[in-house]
Amino acid sequence: GIQVEQSPPDLILQEGANSTLRCNFSDSVNNLQWFHQNPWGQLINLFYIPSGTKQNGRLSATTVATERYSLLYISSSQTTDSGVYFCAVNTPLVFGKGTRLSVIA
Amino acid sequence: KAGVTQTPRYLIKTRGQQVTLSCSPISGHRSVSWYQQTPGQGLQFLFEYFSETQRNKGNFPGRFSGRQFSNSRSEMNVSTLELGDSALYLCASSLWGGTYEQYFGPGTRLTVT
Image (cartoon, rainbow over all chains, first blue to last red; front, top):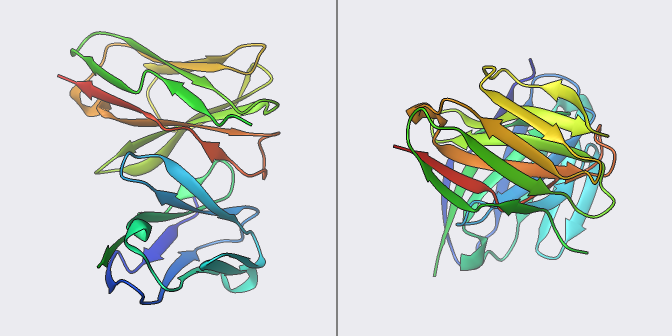
C-alpha cells in the first residue's frame, strides 16, 4: 500500500517563528488532507488539498502531486499552534506518523 | 451545522468484555468511517459505511464490527476485549465518501484493564 512519511518528526519553535512541515507519499493520490490534533485528541481539518496551493490565515499548504509531496507552512507561530500535525492521503485515509510541534513563548 | 459527535467520550472496560461506541455524522453526510489511534501503530483505518452498507474494511480481526443506521448514525462494536484494544477511536464523516473531505469527531478513549 501507499506509504506516507512526514518530516521532521519533532519541531520546537519560538513564538513568532515560521516553519515548514513536509509530507512525502509513495504513489499518486486522489485525496490529501492536513490535520492538527488538539491536546484532547480531536483531529481538526486544516486543508483538503490533493493538488495546488491554499491559504487560511497564517497557514498555507502546497501539494505537488506529480512529485509526490505536500508542504504545510505555519507563519508567525503561536503557542496555540502546538500539537501534532498529520498528513493523510487517499480513501480510506492513510496517515503519516505526524510532526509534533511545540511553540515556546 | 453541528459537527461529528461521538459517545461515550471515555470508557473503561475489563478484558473479555464487549463495548459499543456510537457516532453521529454531520447532518447530510452519508459516509461514516472509523479509525483507531494507538501510540505504537498510529492512526489506522477500521471500516467505512455508506448507506447502511460496509464499503471498505481495514486489517482488523473479526472482533471489530460495525453498522450504520438509516439516519447515517453508526456504531462500532468490539467483542472479547484485549489489552491491546486500548486506544482512541475516531469517527469521521463525509458527504459521499470517496475523495470527499472527511471531518472527525472528538473520539472515544477506551481503556481495557
